[in-house]
Image 1 (cartoon, rainbow, N blue to C red):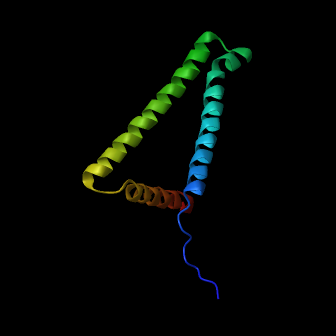
Image 2: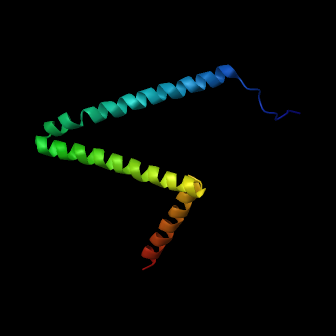
Image 3: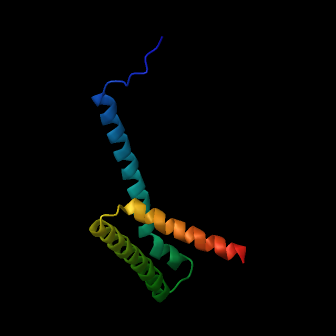
Length: 106
């Protein structure tokens, strides 16, 4: 008869897991920042003018900052009202799904 007791905590495997996640994060950041850095030259290679490159880059920056603003505001509002962020997200998701099902039913 085998026992299904939990295994004792192993510091070595925990450390290996943390290091592995760190290495994955490092490579993801390098890939993201590398791709982001070549956006302008790539658009220039495609024949875009400096104005178009500036507009595209500026619009991307604006979208990122607006997303941060909206997410931080909703998180802060949820924290002030005592609601968890996930509960607030689920309720908004249900509302969107119900609106979508009404649109499909028309």
